View 1: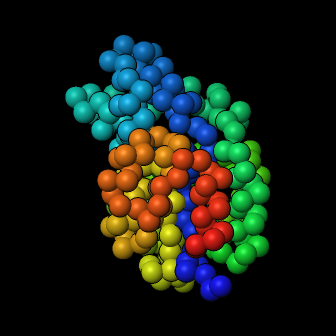
View 2: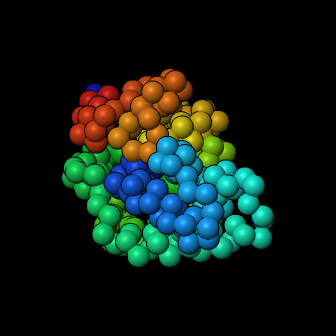
Length: 218
């Protein structure tokens, strides 16, 4: 059966890697270090997927601009002390291999920095699986469409042949802004009902369901 999509673009944190809880706890620890109000889980989870500077500004809008750098530094201190231990979701490695063998081009569009994504790709050994990647310190932060537009241009794939896969409303809004179809995964940072409100093609409760759908319908 002919493929509907040529390019599958994955978010990283909360979609391929089970990192949302570590990100949330690192944000909360950074706030404690600086004697700032500590956000609850929902508030800290909501900014996952944004570029780091944009995330901190959204989370702490009243913070003096000069202090955002200190917040970012403390967040990185806590997160980078644990990132090598963060696992992929079950089945991700095998799924990406199967999708590549089926002829899909694979890419990543992430709120991580280039350094952070390269660390994660190195730890997981998945770097060779992806034809191209874009990070938040190379492009405008999600939900701006720049990451997707650049990936499609680099790989020579049209919007109608591209699918965005992500766990946040930032991912789905980015896809809408790029005129790209999207599916949501409700096992990551944002509640499933928030994703479904943006009318993705489908929304999945686990990675296995995502893989089965991609194999059958993508």
